[in-house]
Image (cartoon, rainbow, N blue to C red; front, side, top):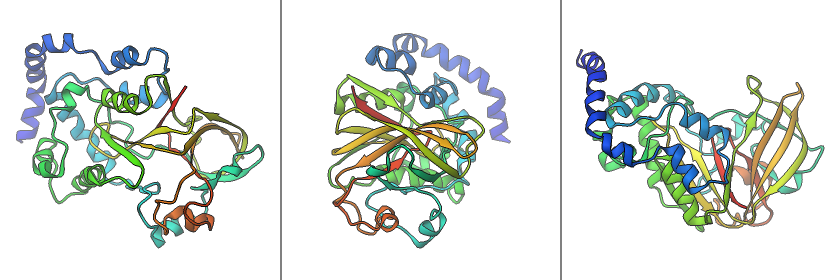
Length: 314
């Protein structure tokens, strides 16, 4: 009952809140404007536009209320860790994806190569970026978990709570050897992290597949273009009540934009990341078991989902 009373009062509370912070909002720029000011020559990828246009929320009370609806949509989805390099593959993972070329070799990125793929978003598409001045006011740590769940009206023993706990735990885990990682809770912090690692002469790319045709099928490589140099920052969208990305810089990494055509005619421009140095990965990682190779021997590649972003130097 209290929840529904709050819903009824929300427009009034929001109006008051916006009025109180009006001068701050004027002073602060929107996430979209911040991108343009820092990266005037870098086009914004489709996925970033979609997440951004889900709604710019100017105050904390509205952000929390909106996110309450979003967190319920992510609870039933898989919390994937296929590219968590420190993890060993489980038997279930191996069985579940044995028909899909989750990992492949760099030499496979040539015209005519065929591989089974399933391109789709891995997280809730309704989540939105919060402006940094809003996101920074919302706790994001395991120590603050009770407070976080309370703010989003999520009970501790639910699937929704488990999803949020796992995301925060993933963000707090130490990176593997050679990895520089940071979980960004706003578009502005993603831009800042990336430019601090790669400089401001960068571009962001993401996988794009024709709408309504995302299904498991055989794709044929029709072309591949290498993007940037030997360093990149990859940002993986995580399951959470609002847009949170696991961003990490890994040395000896190449990025490609790969043109693919499916058996049904579906066209895709998929971003592939190839890791030249896998010596620090878990020897029982899924990639080694799938490709029958050993750590540190050959470059290993994988495509990124539509809701991930790769940053490369121009």
